[in-house]
Every structure is written in C-alpha cells, then in structure tokens.
Length: 381
Ligand code: PLP
View 1: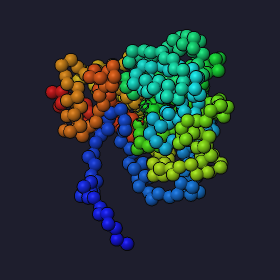
View 2 (view 1 turned 90 degrees about the vertical axis):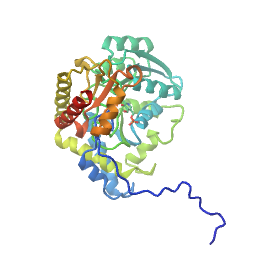
View 3 (view 1 turned 180 degrees about the horizontal axis):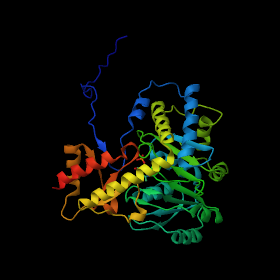
C-alpha cells in the first residue's frame, strides 16, 4: 500500500549508541545501583503475569516487610518513583474534609501539604526551621489540638539531613484514632526503622537510595487500620493507577491484571532487597552509620561544618555548610565535571547555604568518602 503522506524526518536524530558518563553519585539520590542489581535488571523481561514473575513479586513483598520491620499484609512496590508511592498513601486514605496534620521542616513536608490539599484534605501544619526536628511534646500538643485523621511526618528530610525521631508517636496517634503516615524515602535500608514497633500505619519509600537500585519501583505499605479506612471510604479513590484496592488484586491472591509492571525494575528491586537480607538489616544500618561518621570526621578535618546537630543527623544524607565566600554551585559543578562526583545543592531555606552529600546503599563505603574528600581538597584549594 502506498501512502501519499511522506514521513517528516525533522526530529529523526542520527545517534550513536548510548554512552553514559561514570559518576559517583554522592548527592541526595539516586545513588549508584549495586553492580549485582544492574546485572539482575539485564535479564530478559518476562510477562507480568508469568508464574515466575508472580513468585518474584511475593519475594519482594516479604523482603519489604523485612526491611521495614512490619507484618503488614499490604506491602507492595508501586510502579513509579517515590513520589508515586507518596501520592498513593494520601490518595487511598484521605477523603474530602479529613483533617491531615503535617510536620513541615523541609521541602518534602511541603510536598505532602500540596498533595494532601489536592485530595481535599483540611490540611493543618506544624513547622520547624529546616534542619531541626519535632519533639514528642510538640507533636502531642498538635495532635490533641487538631485531632487529625492522619498525621504525616518525614522520617528522613532529604532537604535538611535531619532524622525525625518516631518512637512513641504511633502510641499517641492511637489515642486519637489518628493514622500515622511516614516518609521513609531517604531512610529505608540506611536508617533504623521499626514500623510496627513504632505504630506506623502508612509508609512509602524509593528504590534508588538506601536500597541501591535504580529509580522506579517504590515500596509502599499500609497497616490493617489504614486498610480499614480505605475499605470504609464513601468516595472512590481519585487516582485509578494508585488505588490499593485494585492494586491489591494484582499483588494479592487474585492476580488480576492491573498494569504492565516494569518487570526489569522489579528484578533490580528483588536483587537489591536480597543483598540487604544477605548483609543483614542491622549490619546494613551499622555500615551506613560507620561510614557517615567517617565522612563527618573527614570533612571536619578539612575545616567544614555540618548543618544539623549530631544527634539528629541522618546516616544517609549530610548537609554540609558552604563556607563564607565559596560559590557552592561552582564547587558542585567542578566536582561533577572534573572529578565525576555528584553532590547536591541546598533546597528552599537552605539554597546556597549547604551541599547535600549522600552515602546510601552501595555508595556507603569508605572509598566514597576518600574520593569525595580528596576532590573537595583540590577544588576548595
Ligand atoms: N520524599 C523524600 C524525603 C525524598 O527525598 C524524595 C526524593 O528524593 C521524595 C519523597 C520523592 O521521591 P522521588 O524523587 O523518587 O519521586
């Protein structure tokens, strides 16, 4: 068959095969994927309903329960980045008019505020300067005042490098029938988390940080309490793709097609989780802590200061104060272009004030620290 319409070649680029620069990713994420994870992702895709793939999904669910320390039956990976899993927590549990109390002490707290509002929540916020965390009294007063349906906190605020303590918050929430929602994007795999022990009802994370995988398959979990709220909804979940009642039929025993899972990413996630289990979760947390302490000491030795008080610093992400008179952006650019090392800049209140240095997953190693500190010495002169 001949066509009278000819193909427009304006956008047809004549490219050579892809070559990606080798970077050491020491920014806020992604971190470099573990070589074994990359190898796993190199396998040929199989069908998303193939029994072998369904068995792999079961393994992912079990390993996610392990890394989060939860028994939640509804523990899955969302096909999408951390933001999709974040959206899933709110989309499923917020009904128009629900009071949602959010702790905002950085960029990602604000993202939760924006999202909750879009699902019709009556959003209330408590705030802290960026780099600080809420204490239990502050949280308790706010929960008593607002009696929210949901309290949302960011465990590891990637924009500030601060770790929000969560012990006893769940207990407090139980008294008011409040669900506790926690962002663990920059903590899962690198920072101790005990979801069930802490009474967390909803949590989400990502694959590209502490777990050492590529981005795109994001851990999500909800407690039976949270599931009950979802089942009792009067309105449909306003997001079809992230509706956990529908997704549960794919991840659960029904095995009904929902969407075509990004199978290679799931291979990667399964391998990343397998590696954490092989190392042992407690060992993995300890490795992150040991290496970050080495980072702090090494940076202090060359005269740099950290932004967050030591007690609340994350093992995965450190905010380093940019010294007076130093152009932080120019330094980051030089590290990238001359040393192939990525570090992040500050966001929001901390823009221009800090660099953000991540030591996550596969990259949490003394060699990463040594490379960065040598390069920084050269760049800072
Ligand atoms: N929450 C926090 C604390 C994060 O650090 C990030 C990303 O860095 C997100 C949510 C969003 O995750 P993603 O960029 O994978 O969508």
